[in-house]
Image (cartoon, rainbow, N blue to C red):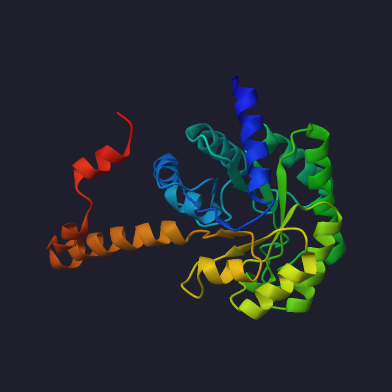
Length: 274
């Protein structure tokens, strides 16, 4: 199988995952974490803008387009499962520029891509609805022009950007679905009632739910029709928690007790190919 055939096969497999049932798509931040997740049996993975940014010593939303594209290329080449790209807001404002950047992202080998409607401006945290819709439509057009069948995820960020308005979120998500988003996603929803309302509003299109805190279970989300579950930067934060606890112990107490919780080197080595 050629590289292009393998990429096309992963993209087809990714679409099939969204057709029925419920699956977890965890978020690694580098090649090692990606390969370990695949070894645990996860059928697809998604990048995390925050996890990747922290691994480079930067805050979330402070990486460049070129950084993001290089990361997507490395991640897609590192595993044989579909990779969904956290493409933030498309690294542009104008719809035409979003489309151009999506076209570049397609060439990295990803199977799916999300576009957000947040601006990064606390005073005006979301793009005006019509502009947000036009941006999503432009991403759709870029994907269609590529003929690749990449899955487009439409994200509405109100619940994590200081605008927790369910009616506005649903209005945005349904509009994104109308202009071609294949999967809909409103990070920050933690009420099963709210999540169910979103699922029903955009049906039959699939919904992704972010679980970055222990407020629910896979079984509970599956029961209300959620198709896909991601964890954002939560796995990265969990890993950093262990690192910081051990480092702070050394810095403040001069002891090394945290190392008793470390995974033994032989076990770590066994998890990776020689």
